[in-house]
Amino acid sequence: MQQTYVFTAELVGFQGVRRTITVREDMTLVDLHYALQSAFDWDDDHLYAFWLDGAFWASADEHYMHPHHATSVDRPAKNACARLHELALSEGRQIAYEFDFERKWRVQLELREIRAEQASAVARCIERVGDAPPQYEGVAFEDKEDGAAAQPTVEFVALHEEADAA
Image (tube, rainbow, N blue to C red; front, side, top):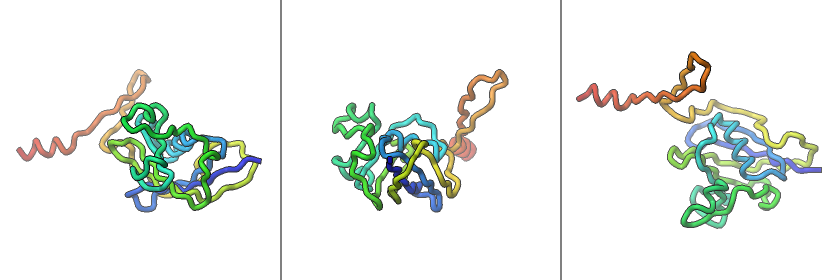
């Protein structure tokens, strides 16, 4: 029988915004990343990292990065392709996760429970509390008449205000 990890994921800086995510033990940190992307309605178009000691940017020993980025930086990190059951995680473990190093979307994870169960779903969000803010503030997607993919339209509110003041 496989084990399923149950994580509470709190969006740092946004009071009351959290998700509960389950991930099978044979899945990777990459899979946990995808579950977080889905749970917070984020596009997967930026780098990310996990710190298994629970502190952002604190420990190189516990730092796991996006697979393509892990080997391309000056101080290589561990690859996020690591399987959860290989990481010696236990209940109560705090994990820090950052997505999009420019905007710094930070999530504090806690491994709330390890369940022994027949799990068919590999990773899923089982609870949503609070509304996550939009990934890109000030970006709206316009529908195209021809049905083609929408392109973002950025509103430069701050620039308009500065121009009006001048």
